[in-house]
Amino acid sequence: MPAYVLWDIDNTLLYTGGAGSLGMRRAFEDLYGVEDAFGRVEFSGRTDTAIFADAAHAHGIAPERMGEEMLRFLEAYIPHLRSALVEVNGELMPGIADVLAALHERDDVVMGLGTGNFRRGGEMKLLHYGIDAYFPGFVGGFGEDSPSRDEVIRIGIERLTQGSANGHRVVVIGDTPHDVTAAHANGAYALAVATGRNPMDELIACGADLALADLSDVAKVVDIICA
Image (cartoon, rainbow, N blue to C red):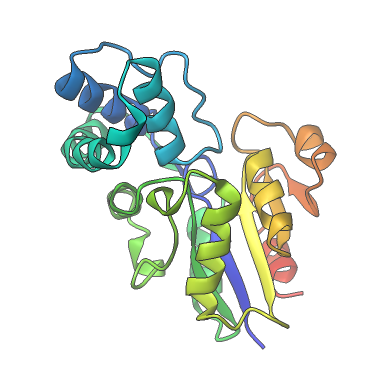
């Protein structure tokens, strides 16, 4: 019986050096002429839909225009993200290359994504850091699916398991309390990793089934996922 694994992207699989937020700021300024539109918007653990909606509301975009403006923003954001990824320095998180390679070799693990990133933005980040091949078809839940992280994970599980999650082990791996609560809201095991802003004690306090400093102990991580 396979284990299904949904990975968060930012600060879990990789660190972009702030390329995503930089791309968003530039896209918003291009479209609406507002500098630093996201200065008071919380990014960590949230979906790109929710992040954009906060900035849009703060700067006078009418709610009834949100769907249309979201599409415009996404089209503006993608080229800015591509440029920003080249401009700033980022890296894969500790152990990620080896963990992905080890899981990829197993026939009892199916990997997908449970991320707040817009799908195209997330795909661009994985391609830039050379790990896109571990996610064929780029299956999972993404930022445009819902403002709610819980709903993004629900959709990601549904897509990854093709609707047959019952009885299977589902592991959600992320670096924020939002990842933990979204995992539990969907009956999944929450493996938290303290490679973002939240330390291990905070991740444990919010209910993570297990929290690790990073994923550099490859054998341990594989054992946890395949338990």
